[in-house]
Length: 306
Image: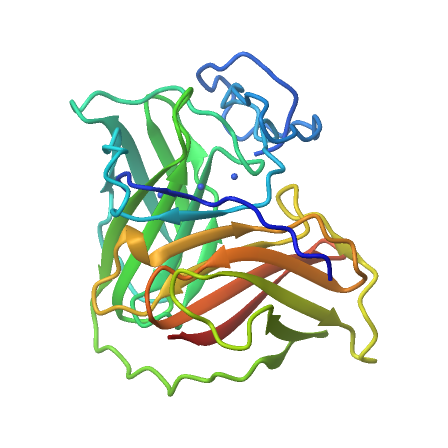
Protein backbone atom coordinates (compact mmCIF):
# COMPACT_ATOMS: atom_id res chain seq x y z
CA UNK A 1 0.00 0.00 0.00
CA UNK A 2 1.49 3.28 -1.02
CA UNK A 3 0.48 5.99 1.48
CA UNK A 4 -1.03 9.07 -0.01
CA UNK A 5 -1.23 12.00 2.37
CA UNK A 6 -3.95 14.41 1.53
CA UNK A 7 -5.41 17.50 3.03
CA UNK A 8 -8.77 17.60 4.69
CA UNK A 9 -10.74 20.75 5.24
CA UNK A 10 -12.27 21.70 8.56
CA UNK A 11 -14.94 24.31 8.28
CA UNK A 12 -18.02 25.61 10.05
CA UNK A 13 -21.38 26.34 8.47
CA UNK A 14 -25.07 25.82 9.21
CA UNK A 15 -27.20 22.86 8.44
CA UNK A 16 -28.24 19.17 4.59
CA UNK A 17 -26.45 16.66 -0.42
CA UNK A 18 -23.59 15.24 -4.51
CA UNK A 19 -21.25 16.29 -8.27
CA UNK A 20 -18.93 15.50 -11.58
CA UNK A 21 -18.18 17.80 -14.84
CA UNK A 22 -16.35 20.15 -17.12
CA UNK A 23 -16.81 23.84 -16.39
CA UNK A 24 -20.29 25.23 -17.02
CA UNK A 25 -21.59 28.62 -16.07
CA UNK A 26 -23.34 28.53 -12.70
CA UNK A 27 -27.06 29.30 -12.63
CA UNK A 28 -30.50 28.46 -11.34
CA UNK A 29 -32.06 25.08 -11.95
CA UNK A 30 -34.56 25.24 -14.78
CA UNK A 31 -35.36 21.53 -15.07
CA UNK A 32 -35.21 19.90 -11.61
CA UNK A 33 -34.18 16.27 -11.61
CA UNK A 34 -33.22 16.18 -15.30
CA UNK A 35 -30.46 13.62 -15.75
CA UNK A 36 -27.46 14.38 -17.91
CA UNK A 37 -24.50 12.16 -18.71
CA UNK A 38 -21.18 12.45 -16.91
CA UNK A 39 -19.10 15.30 -18.23
CA UNK A 40 -15.77 14.20 -16.79
CA UNK A 41 -13.88 14.79 -13.56
CA UNK A 42 -12.21 18.06 -12.68
CA UNK A 43 -8.76 17.63 -11.25
CA UNK A 44 -7.89 19.21 -7.92
CA UNK A 45 -7.16 22.90 -8.14
CA UNK A 46 -9.55 23.69 -11.01
CA UNK A 47 -12.62 25.82 -10.40
CA UNK A 48 -15.86 23.86 -10.53
CA UNK A 49 -18.79 26.26 -10.90
CA UNK A 50 -21.68 24.57 -12.68
CA UNK A 51 -25.38 25.04 -13.23
CA UNK A 52 -27.39 23.33 -10.51
CA UNK A 53 -29.67 22.01 -13.24
CA UNK A 54 -26.92 19.58 -14.24
CA UNK A 55 -26.86 16.80 -11.61
CA UNK A 56 -23.58 15.44 -13.01
CA UNK A 57 -21.41 18.57 -12.92
CA UNK A 58 -18.30 19.65 -11.05
CA UNK A 59 -16.26 17.31 -8.89
CA UNK A 60 -12.76 17.61 -7.44
CA UNK A 61 -10.73 14.43 -7.43
CA UNK A 62 -8.63 15.58 -4.50
CA UNK A 63 -8.38 12.81 -1.90
CA UNK A 64 -9.60 14.37 1.30
CA UNK A 65 -12.12 14.28 4.12
CA UNK A 66 -14.59 17.01 4.92
CA UNK A 67 -14.60 17.67 8.66
CA UNK A 68 -17.55 19.90 9.45
CA UNK A 69 -16.75 21.42 12.80
CA UNK A 70 -17.34 24.61 14.72
CA UNK A 71 -13.63 24.66 15.57
CA UNK A 72 -12.88 26.55 12.37
CA UNK A 73 -13.78 30.03 13.55
CA UNK A 74 -12.48 31.59 10.34
CA UNK A 75 -15.54 30.45 8.37
CA UNK A 76 -18.66 32.23 9.59
CA UNK A 77 -21.96 30.59 8.62
CA UNK A 78 -23.14 31.89 5.25
CA UNK A 79 -26.40 29.97 4.91
CA UNK A 80 -29.06 28.26 6.95
CA UNK A 81 -31.52 25.45 6.25
CA UNK A 82 -35.13 25.38 7.41
CA UNK A 83 -37.20 22.22 7.53
CA UNK A 84 -40.93 22.52 6.83
CA UNK A 85 -43.99 20.45 5.83
CA UNK A 86 -43.38 17.92 8.59
CA UNK A 87 -47.01 17.10 9.40
CA UNK A 88 -48.15 13.68 10.61
CA UNK A 89 -44.73 12.03 10.72
CA UNK A 90 -45.06 8.38 11.69
CA UNK A 91 -42.49 5.65 12.08
CA UNK A 92 -41.84 3.57 8.96
CA UNK A 93 -44.20 5.71 6.83
CA UNK A 94 -42.89 7.79 3.89
CA UNK A 95 -42.97 11.55 4.40
CA UNK A 96 -41.99 14.40 2.07
CA UNK A 97 -39.47 16.76 3.65
CA UNK A 98 -39.09 20.31 2.34
CA UNK A 99 -35.78 22.08 2.97
CA UNK A 100 -35.38 25.80 2.32
CA UNK A 101 -31.87 27.25 1.99
CA UNK A 102 -31.51 30.91 2.97
CA UNK A 103 -28.66 33.34 3.51
CA UNK A 104 -28.01 34.89 6.91
CA UNK A 105 -30.51 37.66 6.11
CA UNK A 106 -33.32 35.21 5.40
CA UNK A 107 -33.21 35.61 1.61
CA UNK A 108 -33.58 32.46 -0.50
CA UNK A 109 -30.36 31.08 -1.99
CA UNK A 110 -31.24 30.25 -5.61
CA UNK A 111 -27.99 29.10 -7.26
CA UNK A 112 -26.02 25.98 -6.37
CA UNK A 113 -23.01 24.10 -7.69
CA UNK A 114 -23.21 20.36 -8.11
CA UNK A 115 -20.66 18.21 -6.30
CA UNK A 116 -20.35 14.44 -6.20
CA UNK A 117 -22.94 14.37 -8.99
CA UNK A 118 -25.77 15.92 -6.96
CA UNK A 119 -26.92 19.36 -5.86
CA UNK A 120 -27.62 18.25 -2.28
CA UNK A 121 -26.71 15.24 -0.17
CA UNK A 122 -28.85 14.56 2.88
CA UNK A 123 -27.42 12.21 5.50
CA UNK A 124 -30.08 10.98 7.93
CA UNK A 125 -29.06 9.16 11.11
CA UNK A 126 -30.96 8.19 14.22
CA UNK A 127 -29.35 9.73 17.27
CA UNK A 128 -28.41 6.25 18.52
CA UNK A 129 -26.64 5.70 15.14
CA UNK A 130 -28.61 2.55 14.38
CA UNK A 131 -30.28 4.02 11.27
CA UNK A 132 -28.49 5.58 8.28
CA UNK A 133 -29.77 6.90 4.99
CA UNK A 134 -28.09 8.88 2.19
CA UNK A 135 -30.70 10.83 0.20
CA UNK A 136 -30.58 13.35 -2.64
CA UNK A 137 -33.25 16.04 -2.42
CA UNK A 138 -34.51 17.52 -5.68
CA UNK A 139 -34.24 21.27 -6.23
CA UNK A 140 -37.68 22.88 -6.67
CA UNK A 141 -36.63 26.52 -7.31
CA UNK A 142 -36.26 29.54 -5.03
CA UNK A 143 -33.99 27.74 -2.56
CA UNK A 144 -36.44 24.90 -1.90
CA UNK A 145 -35.51 21.21 -1.96
CA UNK A 146 -37.80 18.22 -1.50
CA UNK A 147 -37.16 14.57 -0.71
CA UNK A 148 -39.15 11.58 0.46
CA UNK A 149 -37.76 10.02 3.63
CA UNK A 150 -38.74 7.21 5.96
CA UNK A 151 -37.91 7.01 9.66
CA UNK A 152 -37.99 3.35 10.68
CA UNK A 153 -38.92 3.73 14.34
CA UNK A 154 -39.81 6.33 17.00
CA UNK A 155 -37.04 8.50 18.36
CA UNK A 156 -34.78 11.42 17.56
CA UNK A 157 -33.03 11.86 14.21
CA UNK A 158 -30.34 14.23 12.95
CA UNK A 159 -30.15 15.30 9.31
CA UNK A 160 -26.91 16.64 7.82
CA UNK A 161 -27.70 18.69 4.70
CA UNK A 162 -24.60 18.99 2.49
CA UNK A 163 -24.77 21.51 -0.38
CA UNK A 164 -22.71 24.13 -2.18
CA UNK A 165 -24.14 27.59 -2.94
CA UNK A 166 -22.75 28.87 -6.22
CA UNK A 167 -19.27 30.31 -5.80
CA UNK A 168 -19.07 29.41 -2.10
CA UNK A 169 -17.52 26.64 -0.07
CA UNK A 170 -19.43 23.47 0.63
CA UNK A 171 -21.95 24.08 3.41
CA UNK A 172 -23.39 21.69 5.98
CA UNK A 173 -26.61 22.48 7.81
CA UNK A 174 -27.90 20.40 10.69
CA UNK A 175 -31.60 19.65 11.11
CA UNK A 176 -33.45 17.73 13.80
CA UNK A 177 -36.52 15.52 13.59
CA UNK A 178 -38.47 13.61 16.23
CA UNK A 179 -40.75 10.69 15.42
CA UNK A 180 -43.38 10.20 18.12
CA UNK A 181 -43.75 6.90 19.93
CA UNK A 182 -41.86 4.72 22.38
CA UNK A 183 -38.14 4.61 21.60
CA UNK A 184 -36.35 1.27 21.65
CA UNK A 185 -33.07 0.68 23.43
CA UNK A 186 -30.06 0.52 21.15
CA UNK A 187 -28.30 -2.87 20.97
CA UNK A 188 -24.77 -3.23 22.38
CA UNK A 189 -22.04 -1.74 20.21
CA UNK A 190 -20.41 -4.32 17.94
CA UNK A 191 -16.73 -3.64 17.22
CA UNK A 192 -16.41 -6.57 14.81
CA UNK A 193 -14.22 -5.58 11.84
CA UNK A 194 -15.46 -8.33 9.48
CA UNK A 195 -19.09 -8.53 8.37
CA UNK A 196 -21.25 -9.67 5.47
CA UNK A 197 -23.69 -7.35 3.72
CA UNK A 198 -25.78 -9.43 1.36
CA UNK A 199 -23.36 -11.16 -1.04
CA UNK A 200 -20.47 -8.83 -0.12
CA UNK A 201 -18.00 -9.77 2.59
CA UNK A 202 -16.24 -6.75 4.07
CA UNK A 203 -13.21 -6.43 6.30
CA UNK A 204 -12.12 -3.01 7.57
CA UNK A 205 -8.53 -2.23 8.60
CA UNK A 206 -6.52 0.89 9.42
CA UNK A 207 -3.00 2.11 8.74
CA UNK A 208 -2.45 2.64 12.48
CA UNK A 209 -2.68 -0.11 15.13
CA UNK A 210 -4.64 2.22 17.42
CA UNK A 211 -6.84 5.12 16.40
CA UNK A 212 -5.90 8.36 18.12
CA UNK A 213 -7.68 11.69 18.06
CA UNK A 214 -6.26 14.14 15.52
CA UNK A 215 -4.06 11.55 13.79
CA UNK A 216 -4.33 11.08 10.02
CA UNK A 217 -5.19 7.50 9.17
CA UNK A 218 -5.98 5.33 6.15
CA UNK A 219 -9.30 3.48 6.37
CA UNK A 220 -9.19 0.38 4.14
CA UNK A 221 -12.26 -1.58 3.05
CA UNK A 222 -11.50 -5.04 1.69
CA UNK A 223 -14.48 -6.23 -0.38
CA UNK A 224 -14.89 -9.90 -1.32
CA UNK A 225 -17.58 -12.08 -2.88
CA UNK A 226 -19.22 -15.15 -1.40
CA UNK A 227 -16.23 -17.22 -2.52
CA UNK A 228 -13.94 -14.91 -0.52
CA UNK A 229 -12.32 -13.63 -3.72
CA UNK A 230 -11.72 -9.89 -4.27
CA UNK A 231 -14.72 -8.42 -6.06
CA UNK A 232 -14.18 -7.42 -9.67
CA UNK A 233 -17.49 -5.68 -10.37
CA UNK A 234 -16.99 -2.50 -8.32
CA UNK A 235 -18.52 0.47 -10.14
CA UNK A 236 -18.15 4.22 -9.50
CA UNK A 237 -20.64 5.58 -7.00
CA UNK A 238 -21.28 9.32 -7.23
CA UNK A 239 -18.15 9.57 -9.36
CA UNK A 240 -15.83 7.71 -6.97
CA UNK A 241 -14.87 4.18 -5.89
CA UNK A 242 -16.81 4.71 -2.69
CA UNK A 243 -17.95 7.16 -0.06
CA UNK A 244 -17.43 7.13 3.69
CA UNK A 245 -19.59 8.91 6.26
CA UNK A 246 -18.43 8.98 9.87
CA UNK A 247 -20.48 10.19 12.86
CA UNK A 248 -19.27 10.43 16.44
CA UNK A 249 -21.49 8.98 19.16
CA UNK A 250 -22.90 11.90 21.13
CA UNK A 251 -25.92 12.62 23.32
CA UNK A 252 -26.63 15.64 21.09
CA UNK A 253 -25.24 15.34 17.58
CA UNK A 254 -23.73 18.50 16.06
CA UNK A 255 -21.96 19.38 12.82
CA UNK A 256 -18.61 18.73 14.48
CA UNK A 257 -19.60 15.05 14.86
CA UNK A 258 -19.93 14.62 11.07
CA UNK A 259 -17.14 13.62 8.67
CA UNK A 260 -17.42 12.83 4.95
CA UNK A 261 -14.36 11.19 3.39
CA UNK A 262 -13.71 10.60 -0.33
CA UNK A 263 -12.13 7.46 -1.76
CA UNK A 264 -8.44 7.70 -2.58
CA UNK A 265 -6.92 6.92 -5.97
CA UNK A 266 -6.10 3.32 -5.18
CA UNK A 267 -6.71 0.52 -7.66
CA UNK A 268 -6.01 -2.70 -5.76
CA UNK A 269 -8.70 -5.29 -6.63
CA UNK A 270 -11.43 -5.37 -4.03
CA UNK A 271 -9.92 -2.59 -1.93
CA UNK A 272 -11.13 0.95 -1.34
CA UNK A 273 -8.99 3.37 0.67
CA UNK A 274 -9.95 6.56 2.47
CA UNK A 275 -7.91 9.12 4.37
CA UNK A 276 -9.43 10.80 7.42
CA UNK A 277 -8.81 11.85 11.01
CA UNK A 278 -11.01 11.59 14.07
CA UNK A 279 -11.07 15.00 15.79
CA UNK A 280 -11.81 13.77 19.33
CA UNK A 281 -11.60 10.64 21.41
CA UNK A 282 -14.76 8.56 21.58
CA UNK A 283 -16.81 6.01 19.68
CA UNK A 284 -17.56 6.55 15.99
CA UNK A 285 -19.72 4.75 13.48
CA UNK A 286 -18.50 4.43 9.88
CA UNK A 287 -20.77 3.85 6.90
CA UNK A 288 -18.95 2.91 3.70
CA UNK A 289 -20.99 2.91 0.48
CA UNK A 290 -20.01 1.11 -2.72
CA UNK A 291 -21.73 0.09 -5.95
CA UNK A 292 -21.80 -3.43 -7.41
CA UNK A 293 -23.84 -4.35 -10.49
CA UNK A 294 -25.88 -1.18 -10.16
CA UNK A 295 -26.76 -1.83 -6.51
CA UNK A 296 -25.52 0.21 -3.55
CA UNK A 297 -23.86 -1.78 -0.76
CA UNK A 298 -23.96 0.09 2.54
CA UNK A 299 -21.58 -1.19 5.20
CA UNK A 300 -21.37 -0.13 8.83
CA UNK A 301 -18.66 -0.51 11.49
CA UNK A 302 -17.99 0.89 14.97
CA UNK A 303 -14.54 2.05 16.06
CA UNK A 304 -13.08 3.39 19.29
CA UNK A 305 -10.73 6.39 19.16
CA UNK A 306 -8.34 7.14 22.02
